[in-house]
Image (cartoon, rainbow, N blue to C red; front, top):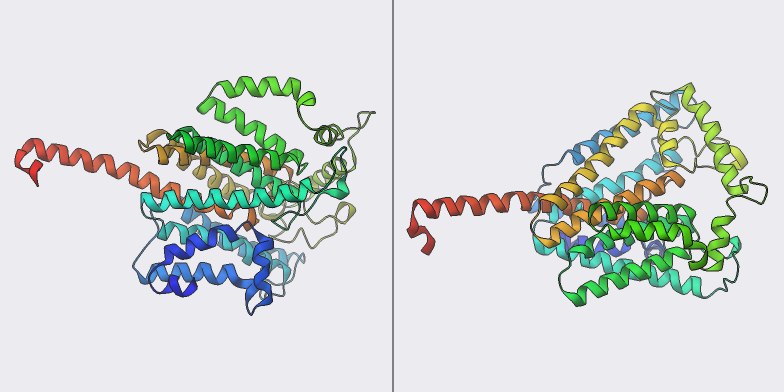
Length: 424
């Protein structure tokens, strides 16, 4: 596929890449081969170079500029962390901070590759369909693992790392955001059979998410459903309200136990929840000590923290600790721009495919934003890689939606001025 991408068909390379982005355990089979660990990096560069050889370019969007500024700022931030004595110089792949930055920067590269090669409606539709197939594969893997265990009661030791290979909470964040993406997308699917298929995919994904036992993903789903209700289907708001009062009688026993164990009978937080509160309290002191620039990107994992944990269990807190107010401003600008692109596409487009993509992306991003309050669900390529391909598709769709009506208008005016043009 690298050769195919370099010799004139980079779009096929992107299609091939999509299922491998979240499915880490499937991708790990390449580790047995030379450079197998760099399979995605090599393929992304092949797609970008192949696109450049064909004269392709990214569409106009401030998101590409924001990513460029953010990537440069994060690298300089690592050197600031080195100056403070918090991390080694970020020079080699053996340096944990540089490796973290390199892995993170693969996300904007995927975004760039998709922006260059997704150029028309057919490509956008194909990206959505491949995303659906990829999600179905993840659902299957999650359910086979979950259903192989007995869940008469909740047991932390039975939770699996999942096909994303980073843990059940990360898998849950992925499932929640793409359940919501397709829940929003299906609102504009017109063919009855396809609607049933996509609703089935949503139901299967929500069911798989239930058995990840991630309370953060449950919150992300509920908030996103309410948002979808406000934007498209007000009945969902009523359903969500009823669910909040009846959920204990509806959800499986193990799920109910997982949610209720947030507090014990004395009203105190259970161990994992209390650990997060302790982490945030310690992080507050770090933020106050260096509020503008932080302590340096990718340095938190190197230091000593509560119970030896290496993450703040809240991405926004992590951004503030490591990159300060400047980093947070860039992050908020990025999130705002993604939501703006999705909302504009949902509201302005006439094509049902584009409107579904816009609405699905908006509620999927809402799920992602909520999930990141419970841990870092943003810097993992496995969780957000496909999401950024969909953002690139939405940017292209918005461009197509805004130019096509203008073209039709211009033709109508020309025909009115010269009726003979109608026959050309």
